[in-house]
Length: 348
Ligand code: ADP
Ligand code: MG
Image (tube, rainbow, N blue to C red):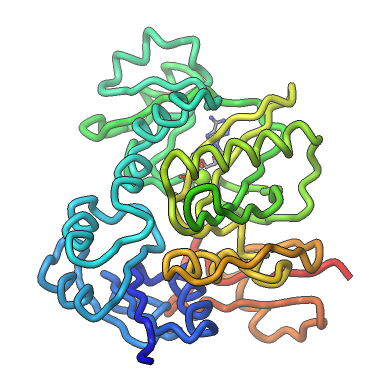
């Protein structure tokens, strides 16, 4: 029997880890990416370089695959929808359309009676004058933000006047939560009511970039059950196929809020590679390629640390203990704030 071929759009570290998981399952991978130096090409069988709106290149890629998925949510909806007419794209492009826009994403979550922070759509600066209740707040671009990019903390109108924000783009203004902690739930949905949910992961951000993730999360049972059931509800409602991450805030009064949804594998789930029998990456490949669902089993408690910018350098020459697992994303250049690798440590 010839091998199944999985197409992956996007060639960063998430693409690399998806390709590595597919390889383990004897599935061939082709990466499509708009970065000529995409690190995932080192982990995949084939690489096609092109822009995400270059329909000819995309078609060439799609024709070589059996099923297509993506490692980031900012691919134009039109591109995904065109491919989906002749090759299955999973998760479905309609999921992406909801989630790649912060406003439709938050409206979707609220319609399910799931709590988010208070938010308002912002089209111009003067609107914010009448929204003092939402200050201090965070102004976020509605599209294309990640790792805190396109976000501004606004304490007062004075802050807004100092910042030179381009209001030709759409924004949402969100009330700032007095955070106690942040957690995430990773869930892989295979089909109707068939899913595997990982336990909540506790996340610490520095400078709006994830710094470390730990299991078990130090949370009470009510939050544990609520976060799991909200993640399941979201995945079911979207009729999602593959791995999805829900990011949550917990405030100082123990209220739980959904911050955002990532329709893909997620940085906070890197520890699942070593801490579980099946990782978030393998589960994603299993779900989108219609392979068997395996019940999740935890192997160990764990902590993952992101190696950002030149933090990677010392690790490249370090000796590791048997319970430490170092991943180098093999990116061509070290850049400030760029995720270069991670280290997962299993509890002994
Ligand atoms: P991104 O898409 O860049 O991940 P997020 O909306 O998840 O953007 O914000 C990044 C981080 O900024 C969050 O994980 C959290 O630490 C902080 N943050 C964002 N929104 C709020 C808020 N409303 N209240 C408190 N902290 C916030
Ligand atoms: Mg986030």
